[in-house]
Image 1 (cartoon, rainbow, N blue to C red):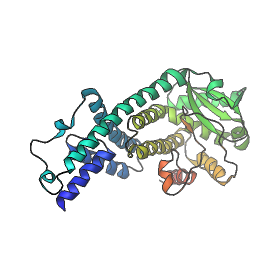
Image 2 (image 1 turned 30 degrees about the vertical axis):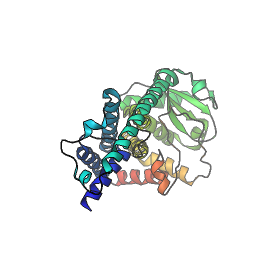
Image 3 (image 1 turned 180 degrees about the horizontal axis):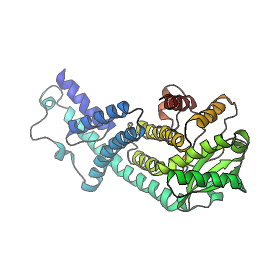
Image 4 (image 1 turned 90 degrees about the horizontal axis):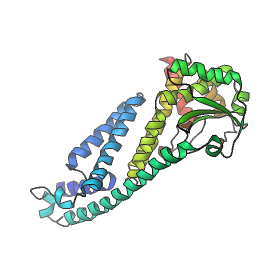
Length: 320
């Protein structure tokens, strides 16, 4: 039974993580990172680092295969594993097939990651606003909104981004990267539905994403998922990183505006509204912060946390 468990563990590691050297070091590293991510469930910066560490380890192994052209023989230990001389003698040949399959997937993943990088940094980021948001009309931005953005940028100690007003009745705010700069987009519906302090809270959430470098973090997570497209674990880690950055943006926004009350008010109103239809955004946006998400098992694939979970976190922050 011990040999069977060891063989099954080796196969499972290859399927989920890719080939490793040594095998148990990688498994221990990933297990420790997952445990840390759970322990740091209220420290979202550390949780992000733990998840990124897992993706880095997996990506390093794939890159190692691509660059060095490693062969399964190099992974064969000096002494045959115990299952190779027992009834599981065919296990090693099966692992050899999995290794070669992982090698091909690693090569395809490297190509996919390269295309993603080129798309975002050499293509998407050079577009005009009308091309980034083809389905939304842009109108003159009020001076008060510009002043709010400038004031929050000063408090956050970052370069002031541009701001634009989108002609849409649906309350929404999001950030896009275009022509090598960031632009915060606010809808007309947002200004109509919320008071001054609530609008400031919405903009502060977007400013928090820029302060926390969330565009870069999300880009790295997406790049890793593209490189590790054949590894199921990457499809869980990438959205987990996105959700952690949303929670951290809420905490940072609360610190920028002096407390979470205004942001709680915004999220509560949106939760009670039946007209949550997000305006057109792009895959290059840092966030569309008023999206509500699925509940249940499929929620592990959502890149945005539910409004209820965000409100709960802010209420805990308020009471602490």
